[in-house]
Length: 263
Image (cartoon, rainbow, N blue to C red; front, side):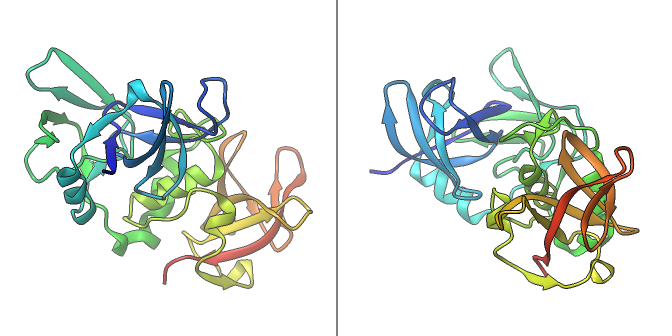
């Protein structure tokens, strides 16, 4: 029988191999569910429900959930924690608090602030957000700017460490738009925009390293600029050649293509 789990702590590193010394390829935030594919000693190989990304997690950080609860997760709409660095869960019946990261999922939470994760009750203290794509073009820059100066972290998906494609994925999540985890995967969908001047806020610009392979992605914003995670989340100029960094007075990334992932 297939086994399912959920992230019931603030963050779980997802690693390439079953070792704490292994490369972190992504992260699970609270409320992210997954299928357990294999187990090796103290490690579990999981496939994330959100983007089907696979990797190894410490089995001590796995909360197994029932197949019935997992099925409910698949068919429901879940709010997420909004643009705030201070959201808290109280674990009812226990003297415990859990601090949540922005963009965390609140599974099956309705209008009430109390919700259950497969039998465990939580009281949510903070601001949540019902994801809505209708305001994407108007609000995407505001959401993206929330992550300004977040440090670059390979495999990161949080305000306290994020990589380029984790950044684009999380910003899109605020509007209920699911996209793949890695930049090269994100570049495979949507419509091509042939000129920077024809782009609009929310379009994704992809860049290669001179070898024809997509290695970087950022979000187009107003005034021919781009917000992206490189060293930290920052805003640079964007033109037909690529990303121009005013501070270093040089082009740092070569533009490959601009895509509009959703009409």
